[in-house]
Length: 318
Image 1 (cartoon, rainbow, N blue to C red):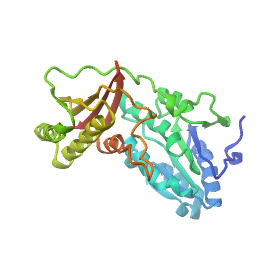
Image 2: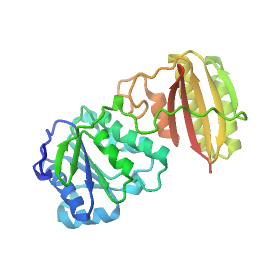
Image 3: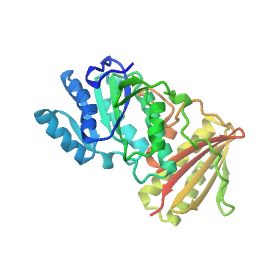
């Protein structure tokens, strides 16, 4: 099924996630304008995140209606996948059941392979974040500026695709619970022999926090960043004690311009897809540890190997 975007119909009470690939300013506007106008006609909250050049195009095309949409600058919005998803989540307020249209264009330039995987997981996590909400998410991809491997993933992370042939369901869409970007799941390399470490139980959490704080300060992290790392490690370690094996091991070391903390849990289980990408529900008593860690740390990586769960928290050094 292919239809022109101006004829595309989405139930205003349901969720839709669309990838739109464009190759010129004209096709960018052809993709975006019908969704913006339909959103405004239905009185929906409308947020457009784009570069200044694209916002200029929209301003010229929309005239006075441009003032009715909320705008953010892409390079300052798409800085960290977990924080960006939280910002969209807070804007849309999915629990409020208010219709919302989110239009954005993630920034891919300058990202290494590891960063690209994180942003691909972010795209998949959108399908969980708004699954039960009246939210339309339109993600733009510049064919010339987006890496080919990212373009190839759009049909796997978006239930709908929009290109020069029109709007169509994605036959290659993969549910978040099953989605794995290329290279994901490759076993961690072992920590270096010089890495510091300690085993811990519930009685050792205070000493664990002191160890992380001392190492972070010695590595050059400022007080606030070190505090964020201490809180994140403490949350993961406490989860290991309370909900995992009841004991674990902390290993901490520097690699290049990063300080890395690894917490191992012999229980080796995480039963939710994309753990830590979504904030816990308003009444949830659990699920905060990984979510807090993803908000505070520069990168969180998770592997289960040989029945052992390994969580690595990365902080960039100054």
